[in-house]
Image 1: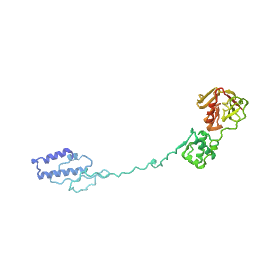
Image 2 (image 1 turned 90 degrees about the vertical axis):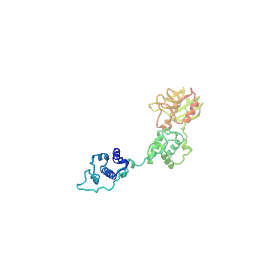
Image 3 (image 1 turned 60 degrees about the vertical axis):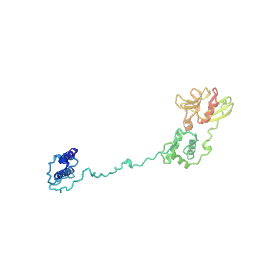
Image 4 (image 1 turned 180 degrees about the vertical axis):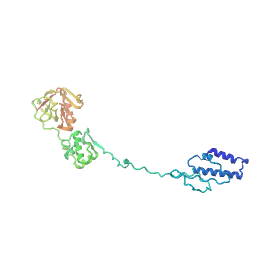
Length: 331
């Protein structure tokens, strides 16, 4: 019943006779209220007040009419002739007892929820560009089991990455070329601790017999045959180191030249590559440290410069050589 209907009923049955209700008036009011409540239950979600206005008034002395037939599952009325007993007590208000809650069902599992969780990738310890004692140990251990065919350099270049990739592929792990924690543990289990000579073998190749031009003064005496550089002062070898030269398309010039420019942190303006500790002797050709030579050895070549792969030695050489000192390149 709407709030306005309740007020109307109160005016009709509760205010006459000085505030006292007669027995007949109370009976009529109760019967009317019972009829309206019965109709409200039988009409579903419609407005009970509106239904009450559409129904004819029932006599006060007669029983309230039976509720309308309930619809069946397919929306049609019940079969003809079906009867229901009149209600003897007012049914509970529809709002008094909430309808039973529908059972909550979990959604079916999806393919993504059934897929196994992805484990985090192992931590990378060393990769291309890394340098230092651990790289040297990695190379020495790989060499013990035949995956690294060079002397350790301490620089993680393309040759080292390929050696690691080969090791990983043979051991059934992802061949990334980077040394992760899993790869390192496998390598430790298969190798022994490298000796001092394995970690830091002599880098000097046998020094060739010096050219006669190298026997006097301060000379960088460079032999293409032995691929060595000997720093000589008055015929005495002060230090020696391995070197490589340009390819047949960019050959290193032969002859006698003076050092005319020193550049400690030089970068090539032509090839945009680092040339640390550069000692220029002929145009753009210089003696300098090469990270590529340190990593790849004699598998590569320069663009005409004299590459040194021992960084500590060429750094010491850079500090000792002066502009005007000789450079002799010969076979």
